[in-house]
Amino acid sequence: MDQFFNSAEKRLARTLLLLGNYSATNQPAKKLPKISQEMLADMIGTTRSRVDLFMNKFRKLRFIHYNGGLQVNQSLRSVVLHN
Image (cartoon, rainbow, N blue to C red):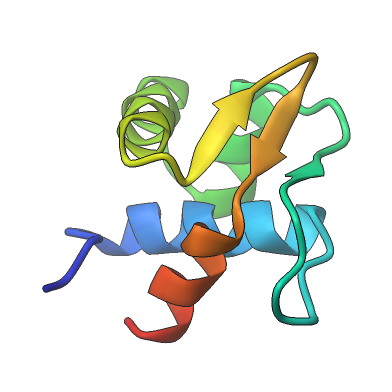
């Protein structure tokens, strides 16, 4: 089943993985550098409100979580690689 429904969502997922420097497998969740949703929107070519929508979806799917900062879970990498 395709977890992502549009290309902006895929670009955001890939950007989060790049910011978290995910290159190896089986890494624990990493805290990303502080970055605003507006900056993420500029990076992927969409609006801040859409980034907010995607981030909420990623959080509900447990791809990311907030614990003293944004953390990306390994599960996001797995989904991006299989998409």
